[in-house]
Image (tube, rainbow, N blue to C red; front, side, top):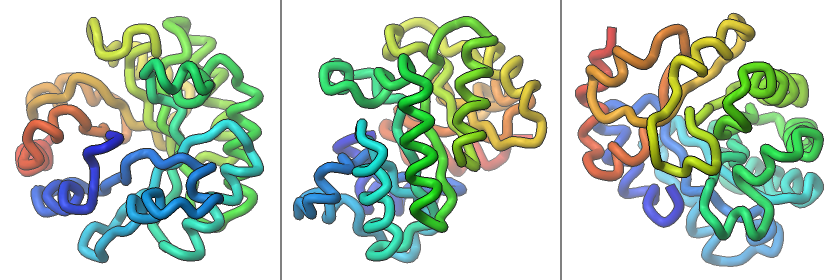
Length: 224
């Protein structure tokens, strides 16, 4: 979550039981230009591990360069590519969930990053549509391009945070990838929510609920 998931917050989440934590999303252009603020956002403590640094951008070459800088200078446990941010600024600058409109362009970014670094590469995305086949094809392309794990917020970009996250649709998508790691996201606010929604998925991301209460992970780790 941009502007919120700093080192202090991530430590609270890890202490409460979060399995892994992510940095806030960072512009690849700022990393390549070595903007001080971007570098500050990538600093983490060893106690935060495993920690994944999340980046965004529209250029495969710049994204790959940024990932290489991160791998060499910060040595996190993975690099996450953001294709999920639904805010208007992202749409205007054609990054985040806007990139779901261009599967080939998104695949080129994932492929460039995966080829440039040894760290595992993951993708954070939203539903490109409500059509199962279209989602499956996008996810398949991401895995084929080098993603090792994909996290899907079960809303479309146009929904933003309105309505309900469609976890049943995620369950159907997961059936197409029994041997791949797919995490779900959206509307998990309690242990009961997690148990009701997780289904056949490999795990879940917690965002807004953790923002309200980082201690939520102490409850969620009891999931059966």
